[in-house]
Length: 271
Image (cartoon, rainbow, N blue to C red; front, side):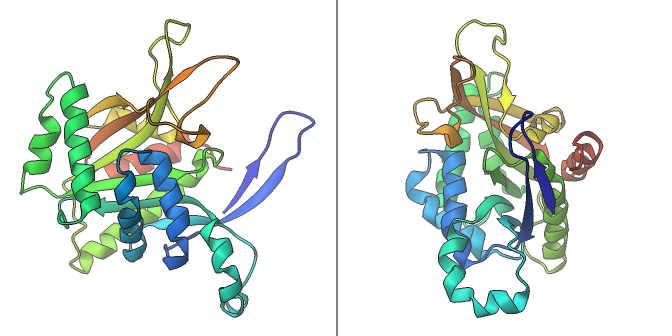
């Protein structure tokens, strides 16, 4: 996958090759760093467990790494030398976690608590709707995790979601618990503070996720402004403007995943 990163006239244009691979042990620190972007301090103590869970289920999902042009023999011969580099070479992660299973894990328990409490406080229509869904033992809920560095373009989303859908279908055929009734996506979002030209409009850090918002069964937004600690966590300044860092939770019927992929194909231009 080759992505062209360009800027205004007079600036350097860089062509970068990315390679999507199943997560491995060497990706742990890179995956954990991306999870920190998404969850900031909300599940800080459980991030290591969650990163380990993602790496352990390497039959579903992928990480995006820079393609250094090495063949498999070169990679094997240099494996020990590259381990440290690989830790810092994870630019994106795309996967799904079954949060209806393994609720004995602290990270799953914390995510469920986070979803319930934020819905209770921020969903004006039915504050208990998330609790009802998560407590329904007839449902299987998958948490979609699609996280990347802020400067990685949305074109990476289409092949990542296509691959994830195929992985999930393969896992179901092998009798693994990835036959979901619903999918939950937590998106990094933001809006301008105070009264201004943009008003209360919500913007999505991952642009493609705004396309998904029309497909969800329900959604709600909550602030993480008091937890942000850097640009990657949603702290932006645009020509002196001040933005509030948010998270928007969207809940989909699992059948929507195919429609999300179709939407990406039709509306996100290829590189």
